[in-house]
Length: 306
Image (tube, rainbow, N blue to C red; front, side, top):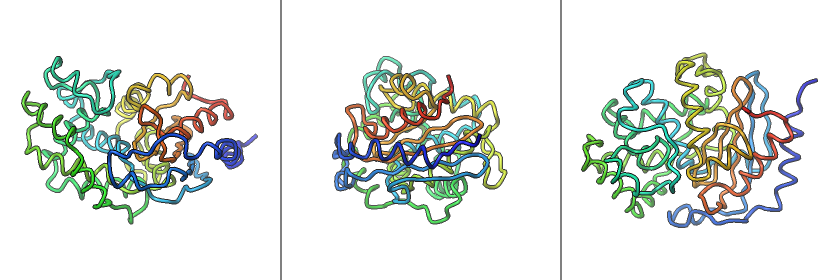
C-alpha cells in the first residue's frame, strides 16, 4: 500500500500549528529579528518524484547553517580525505559559536557544522575556486532545480555588522595556521552563504542527493561518491544540531541539519528528504516547532535510520 505523504504532512501541520510562535527568533542578527515567528511550512520530496507540502512551504527564508552542508559537499568533492586534516568529525557538546575547545585543540575544530569548522571549510573553498560566492550559489541552484535562488545581501550585511564572535573565531583559528586566506575574505563568503534564501521545497529537493547515494536525481549528476555521502549523513546525524544533536537522534532518528533561520532538513536514505521551517527557536538554536514536527513525522511514518 502506497504511503500518503500529503496526508501525513497535513496531519502534522494541523497537530502542531498551535505552537507557532513559541520560542524566540534569532534576534542577535538584526535582519532575522524582523521575521514573523508565526511562519510555518513543511515540504517533502521522494526519490520517485512524489512531492507534497503544507503551510508556508514556498516562502523563502535565510537558510543560515544549513548552508554548511552544501559547502561541505563542495569541499569534500575537491579534497577527499585530506579534508579531515583541517577539521574533525566528533560532536562538540558545545554551542554552535563556542570558542572554548579551540584553545585546547589548537585551532582544529571538532566538526564541520559548528561555526569554527564551517569557517575552516569556507577557507578551503576560497582556496579552491576563483569566485566562491558564484560557485556556492550555482551549486545550490543545480541541486534544487531553482535558478532564481540568490543571496539576501541585506541579511549578509546584517550578519557582518553583528558578527564579532565569528570574527573572533576565524582570527583565533588563523593564529594556529588553520585558516590560509585573508580573514575578511573568509568572513564575507561565510556571511553570504548563510544568507542564501531558499524555501522548504527548494531545500527538500537540494538534499535529495544525500538520500540517493550522492547522485542528484534532478540531472543524474554525481555530487558525492556513495562512501562520502554516507560520511556526510553520519556527520549530520551526530553533529547537525549542535548540542542538541543527541536529542534529535533520540526523538527523530534521521540525519539532518538545522539553521537559526528556523529551517531543518532531514533525509531518509534511499527514500526521501523533508524540510520544516518555523523561525521561533528553542534554547539550543533549533526550530521549536520543527523539532516537534519531525518527531511526529518519523513516528507516524514508522521509519527512521534505526
